[in-house]
Length: 486
Image (cartoon, rainbow, N blue to C red; front, side, top):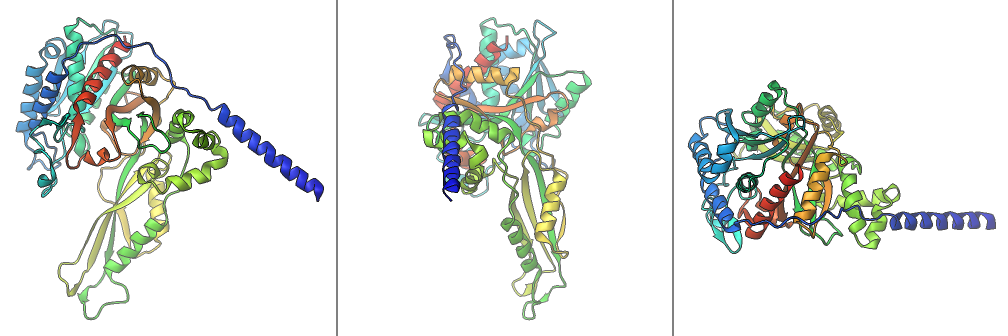
């Protein structure tokens, strides 16, 4: 018995020692770049330019009957007038009717080009929500140290900041060594099939192979990550896949005074209940694991100890993350019932009940795996399951953090946002970058807007806005990133 107690005590002591040693060796991997050269930038005029861009209604639509091309044509003219140097020195092409591809020719052809992406289209304002806006959504009001309006965050702010950077560099006589492509889609919010897809296809036909791509996606997190007090620049190195499944139940219907044991609505509700009771398995690997390898050393010692020893504390981490929606999405495939339809009169049993369930696929979870999981979880032959539409895609591959592109972005962020931790992460939403995988391996998703947890709901929501000072930082970031690529 004494031998057993001694062995157990020794094992525990050894375990504790290993845990503490790993925590002590879990040190910061943040780089310390050289200071950024001084830069004169008219941030007031830049804010006015973005304000004017917001006033141009470029609302995307899947329905050609409701699509309004006038706004996109006006936006093209606005860009020409606002950025004359860029239009004088860069080659401009209109793709898919309304998307734009600019080519900024580099001086050295052997260097792989860089592709900067953004999109000019915006989502509509939800009917009835107009009264909740502090300023009209398409007024582009500059007030309270913010630029307000639809597109300021998603994604005219990024597009205008890129153009401001190019215009500033050209005015300074800058000549890039490598070629830059600027790809601005007009239908990102509805899949990008007429914009990004056609631009990517055109570049592929021209045998263009891009070194790396930067698009929207990540942001500078302000107090969102648990245990991290400093801002964190989240550079997306992967993004989740996308799938919507349609569930349907058919019944005979009839009068509501003589209901069957289970109605079509009841069967469908039960199916959704079973789905939500059977979440996809949590995983702590890939891009999410790399996120905590970068931010873990910057946490207080208690949390640092946990993330330095994920081999031991992984179950605890997953349990805690499950309770935070924004973090839970980083560790598993998620599902969200979004539309339910059934019935048309209160005393008539519906013959058909349908639901749409949206899935965001964790890298490694295929579409076939997700469908199989859904069928096994519901386990009811009365529920028909099929893809709701043809707008679906697998999760992306994971871009390399040791690549030239990530290192350059990391350096540029640290030069402009000196108070910021840089970390890779998994983007839980989707972007147009899915169309470019055939011409590029390393794709990064980052637009350095400073966002708190409350700001996240502004994207596609009410009171979308971006800070004046932050917008100036964003332009400086693009300028420095282009400079650093030389």
